[in-house]
Image (cartoon, rainbow, N blue to C red; front, side, top):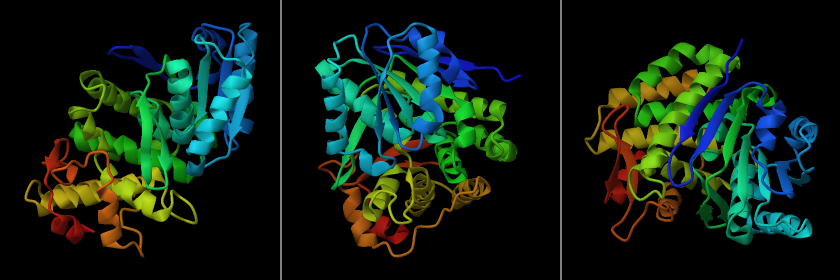
Length: 362
């Protein structure tokens, strides 16, 4: 029988992460997060029909306040100023007080948008993350970063707002499209790339079980990934230093996403873009003399074994992608900064990366 894995995220506002099957049906654990009488359950048009009823029933069985359900359009386009305003209107309509609670049921878009609304309503109300994608379980639901996109770039408007708890129900991954599962595995592999080289070997050995959605393999991968992220976040909660390592591959990925219009019309989704971005970052590391090319090849082969394409999509202009990297949050007045590596498991931040080197890799 599968066992729930739990771990503590320390810091200014400590909270617990739980990973395993059946967590959305644990009404006692969910209701324990509610302090007041106003609850907003935020989901999207894909996830709400599948899982919102379970959450509502679990809370009702405990006598918790019945949540108001806000269902967003599915997709990255919802993570906008309009989407943010819509959630604030929902909170206003229900007369949400400072002890209100927002449950974010969905992937990274729902978690980021609902989290930002919770961060801003009355300068911060309670948030519970209920991630239903692997990507959200190991990345966006952990660490308290919330944000929305602008046409000029991804996650440019946001706030740090830690949740009260995270419940990653691995059972929800059975309804996740194969493409989205593989995208989440890219972020899982990132933790091996930046801090835990043996984890790359574990992923290679367990690739088949992960792709088959084995609860134990998934819970292990989620717990190990979250433990790494939690430790980094505890040491650097506001991304002033080490936490930036979590963005390995993301400078390239965000540029690709923005240039393609955020997963519309056949474009890469976030995890797919991260897979490409990590390989580009590894190749840039080799080009700058930091790491052997064999490590880049090893990472590429693992990602491909996990079902991910590692090639830059055709038709993207390298000059346009370079311009996008200048809007990245790690860029400074001194020029481009990238998270690169000295080899598998040894990431670091490198400032002053020459434009020519980036263009050559692209």
